[in-house]
Length: 84
Image 1 (tube, rainbow, N blue to C red):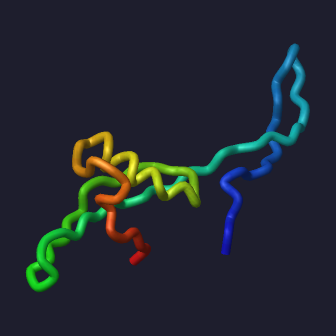
Image 2: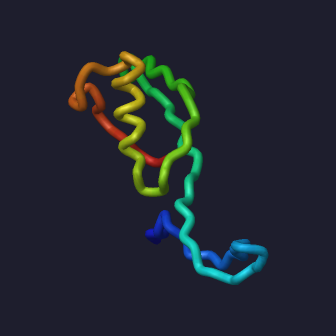
């Protein structure tokens, strides 16, 4: 089920000595663990690499992370992305 990364919340705003109730919007973030699986299929190695925060649904950030860390050189270096 898709959950919007933006939540509508009620806040109290303080301005010029007075409080007023207002609606505001918050962007949510959730942790994403990046795990690598590599090597020949009969001797596959799996390793947890990093945990990063990301906006829900924006999981391709892990490809940019791998590229910026020099682990991959191009998008085609990624064979598969999946949720456990």
